[in-house]
Image 1 (spheres, one colour):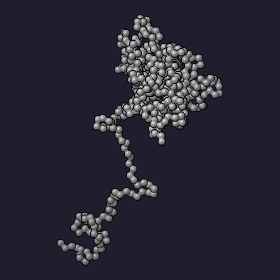
Image 2 (spheres, helix red, strand yellow; image 1 turned 30 degrees about the horizontal axis):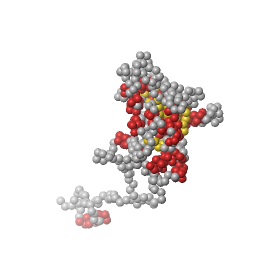
Image 3 (tube, one colour; image 1 turned 90 degrees about the horizontal axis):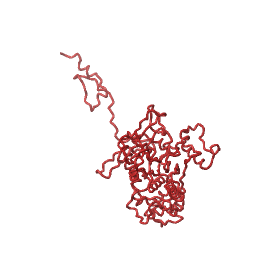
Image 4 (tube, one colour; image 1 turned 120 degrees about the horizontal axis):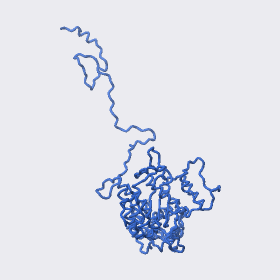
Length: 502
């Protein structure tokens, strides 16, 4: 059939410039004589892989977060350390350095040397059989510098000699024996003044005198919500027990005082522990709470009653031995003077004084006959990890004012500022006793003297850490740099100055 369009009509059609231009894309048409041009969409721009030009004074470098290198274990093919291994490495205690020189003439700490004023400023070595006992009570701290020397030693400063004579008097020895006396002290001082080492020295002296040593190495562990706790029904305000923490305390006490506890027989009746066999020792009694934390608190109460017993119960007189004095130490007291991280059923914070474990050790500071057979209570503050409660600061200022003879009605007596929100519970608890048989004392640890610092640096020189000549001028410079003989700063300076003088 002939088309209605003639050639003359087709030649009159005008083509657009886009249709005349060559295109890289093929034409898409459904009809053989379709004259419509392609879609006039702009082509998709390619992604620019080059770096964009930055603004003025802006770095053009690619910022990437750097991954921290994973700690690798020394054994096991360099595998990554587990969280438990990292925690153990952080708390690892190294007490010997084989590269340090051995001091052959080093005097050990003993019952005679701990009260000898002629050895003041001398570093005494801790007896090797006692190291395991001190480890058991966790007396050593990771950052105390024990790994620098050949063997652990401690400097005999003025406060150490006074404490040694006090322990000797409580034991019924020395020039002024006071057997059965109870002394209660809160040890305070600047950071690095040697408070934790002061507690270690007290433990070493107590072991030498055959005392029972009970310690709380870190008070923070009992209030940071790391251990299980359970409420005691019927108590008002509601009290709480930490069975695992009590079980750990019994383990430390038995490991450190095993030889002494094995010689003491049970002399009181304990109806709450029917599984206790007749004729058992105090070691057997404490071991009941090792594997069964559910009864650990009842075991600890019975154990404490045995240690503080002054006479046997009826029918248990056979084999009774007088109980020795006790040393109780707590490090980091400030954590017990505020609310803990534990929560009650209403999600309110539990005060530290409502924990039975904490309440027991704090009550020893208040009761006059807390240690019926005599002993020493040493509770130290810590500035390395300190919540810094205002109530404790005011309470210690009041103790210092009471010791200085300042009356509570005097305008110089420390009082909290208005609307400061101070914890009245803490102030009332640490209120200075006016007529107590054994009042609470505040002991301030300051820096050591220049003579003591000289003996301390001579110990560094004999160990091969300091190669300079130990002169009065050299010691005076380091003593001034340490803030007046702060023992922690002196130790840092002793490690730093190792180069020989010109």
